[in-house]
Length: 327
Image 1 (cartoon, rainbow, N blue to C red):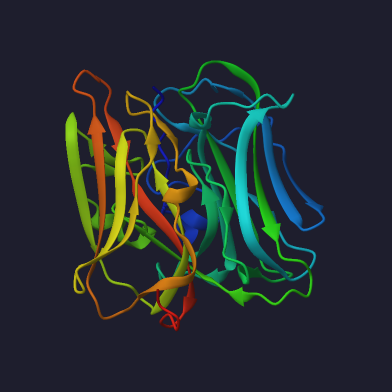
Image 2 (cartoon, one colour):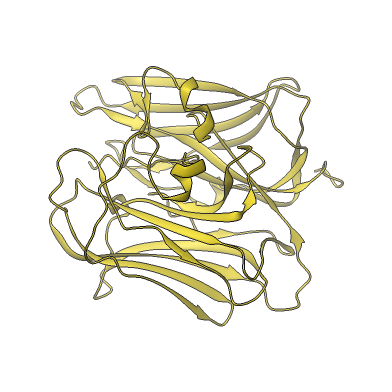
């Protein structure tokens, strides 16, 4: 089993100077100074960022990812992202296991994060879940011409020797002129997701996640939202050995999200099946008044000698204000 370590806010905690230069807070992933090709292509209503090729492993010691240098780009026109998907493969097109991917980050340096004040907006990304994302019809994330966008990819170091490893991240854009309501992006997690709060992390938490001990482990983190919003889509992120991720309103005693991954018998992550990914045009409300809690459950087999690190995160895509048409 590969242990994939995703540095997330989601999810992907980097900010300030560290976020701007693509560094991991406190633990720098080795950057590849050769084979650093990153391209951005535009085809119809798709914008695709392609990383690599690179030969893995990279010769570094330890359980670290091999990071390509950050890549800056701008869009040729105002666009609205209505979905995204990612892939990892070899140069000849051969698909690779999702455990090769450490993370892909998509950052808008021209817009501030609401979830993490003072940090740039993390608006999309992928870890090993590589979930197919499509927002409800009529909603999307607006990206303006000239905004400073940045993307970062890291491949997992502890994989079998493999040549010409590549990854891609494709943003599906709304047709030009389509009426689309703007979605805000808000990150939440059991692990600390904001760089400015790294000092508040638990003793058993690193950039890689929270240490998972043998047997069943339940981890919780309290949460207060910094805005009122109506959640239309929730992108989940988890690691190997994850059994459950949930978001709960403790004040109203209501479970808002309950996401169960598909895993192999040994706990290796397979995917989040489509019916486990929240998507609704009606949505549910979160607010600044109530107390919330994030929960994640893992099971590490008793015979598994290697320590794993877990994360339980969501990227919440929401409209501002309370839901006007509740289900």
